[in-house]
Image (cartoon, rainbow over all chains, first blue to last red; front, top):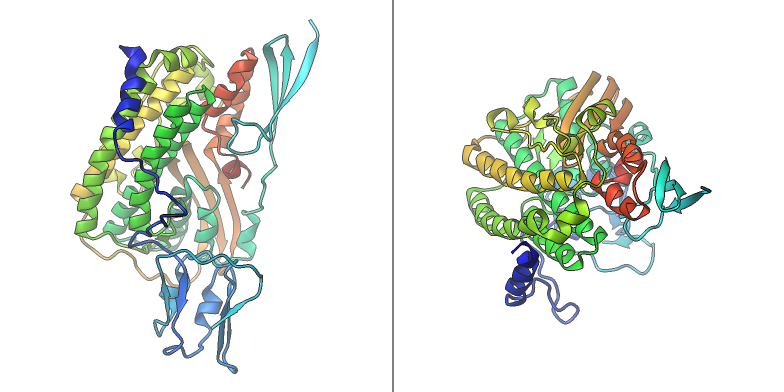
Length: 109
Length: 358
């Protein structure tokens, strides 16, 4: 029966629901613990620059004088190091992926 | 008979990553293989001069896209040993669980690629279908699919709560059923068996002399597994190296198939014994000293040499990756093989070229 191992398997899986989803008609559901887009909340931020100093890829820029926080989405690796470091909990990682960027400009918040 | 040199790679349908082989052939038989590497060298070892020792965990994880977690873990182990950091036991168990999940998805990826190289496309798809289930567990527990980002010096970044562990075990039961179905095909199906049996036989002595590591070494009958050193939580778990004596491509495939079940068993053992404690300790100061850490990657033993001089940047960092150790064996395997067997033999050592070139 060693010749029919795969046939049996193929038949079994042909009768089950496909594991793939119908993208782009059906968007992918992010898992609850997924590390996605970095979200900045302006209200609590004291512009201490800790996040910019800690960022391993240098994706964050903080200007204390002008009270500006900016991110280069193309550099961010969504590691969450800034989220851990932020003393005011102004940063959080969402579960969705970042939207595609069309320019290399910084995203100011 | 006239000799011809056939270039194989760096771009070839069977190669997941670029490596170049100059195959000296007589008729259809390979007489000699001359590998050349360096197509994806990224200079990651040199980056220790720019990134501080804490940030470098992220770089270490990116040495390889498949066994990323164990790279990060080994780097952390080396730095923790230099700094005399005592990692909380729960963190060690979590590292073990994630390490074994990493092994599961790496072996399933390899099985898919191997099925592809022997022309078994449906088996390739089914192997990767099961791998997707493992990746979902990894994403739910660490946040990333292949770059876990959950290991840090002094412990781990994330915990898995009791419900998470319970649902992981339930999912693993389903994964085990799927893996059992797939491995039956790899082990018993005549088409796979005939394609792999007797192809690229590496004797026990050759495997040992050439410095092979991991499943390539164990398939030739040498019982060597770095998990027996007892790093992370392996000192509390039962790890028996899985060996075969044949030393051919089929044996290397069979070893990886059995290691899937071993990894599932180790995860279950770890979950049943996981203690409750902190998941990380605060690490202060800079490392000063030198340490060599060894762990078992899915492809074999990885050696990390870390040298620090009391500053925030390491002085020297060196990695000996398993694929690099297995390349001499590949050259040996290719001598005298048929040209049609080259793709199978290249894949049989589970080459990870980005690891090798760093």
